[in-house]
Image (cartoon, rainbow over all chains, first blue to last red; front, side):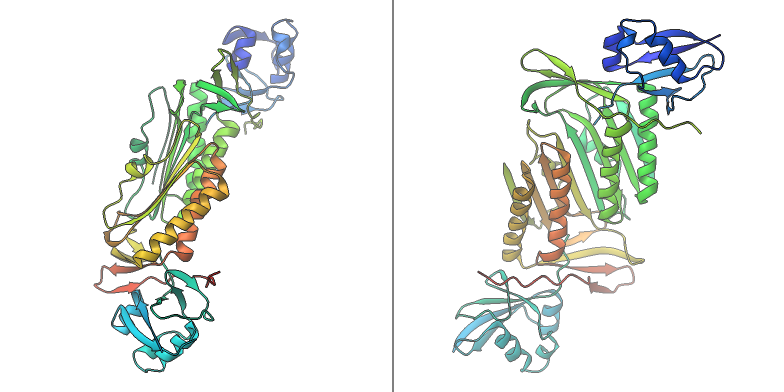
Length: 82
Length: 82
Length: 147
Length: 147
């Protein structure tokens, strides 16, 4: 097992009620596995979209991206800068 | 006959050696007639183009534009503002 | 060539941003300012809070600025994005660009603001005159697989 | 809405031009500055003299500003064109535009500078480092018959 940090911003942060959650994932787990595992916890996490934009260690990443212990996985709501 | 004022700017002014020349034109004369009459004077006026851009009383005008006494006819070299 | 990009919680001074660009080889300078409007879809707005994923947003903003500078060969480019609570009229983003000719300056400036809207991890919550507030509907960034 | 257009022999202050535009309904402000470059077609330039058909140029500049404001529905637009002797780095033209959204501001700003180059009766003579000077090759304005 490996521990990664899930980060939540803006509307996702409001939904989850926290900016950061530590999550244990099996070795070899991908972003998709992490998302499914979180949503599987039920409310409020099941309110997250099934395919959110994510960044792994501060770079946008595909859901097929494999995770390593210590990775920072940010859930990125639709952005609205400018 | 009617008297109009021909104005020269930039390269045309350098060519003609003056910014302003009074010209007598027949009644009913057009811009084209004025241009031909000036060029017919010989040097330095024959150095003006045969179809220069012109403004009559501060508005761009076609060469078919009829002239009236007192009109201000500006010979406009290619512009280069900005 | 100088390229600067930063997020800041301090008010953005347009003159200071403008002062970061322009040299004797430049014929064109463009300053773009995004400002907080007093309305959104016809609804009166009092202010906006900008939240950012700070560490990532700094990287992405630098990336966007660098791409713009490279792609259009502009001389200098500075982009500053504000975070925190802003009132109506305050500057949320300032982009200054200088280049020898105007076409590149316009294109680079426009590129930076459009890319900010597409991929800068920043969000804004509008505060309305009626006491309500809501996150502004944004743009889903493209997932870019890491190479 | 306020639209201003003027020629001036005095140095152009970017901050003052910027201060002419922008209100609480605006989300975008763009300032364009045309500046004197130190080179032209690879030839070192010391300065530029701008000559104008002053009376007509004032009218045409106002016309261009009005057309831009109407066509894109921008809120405020100010354009100032300098005449006389300018050194390298000095501002020859400043265009400030504000509007609710950015697209109109960019388009209106670009329209004003492009139309200036097409039809403002202004000419420039470049002064080169080798002591020579010459009128810059310009654009022949379209003859518009008076209606």
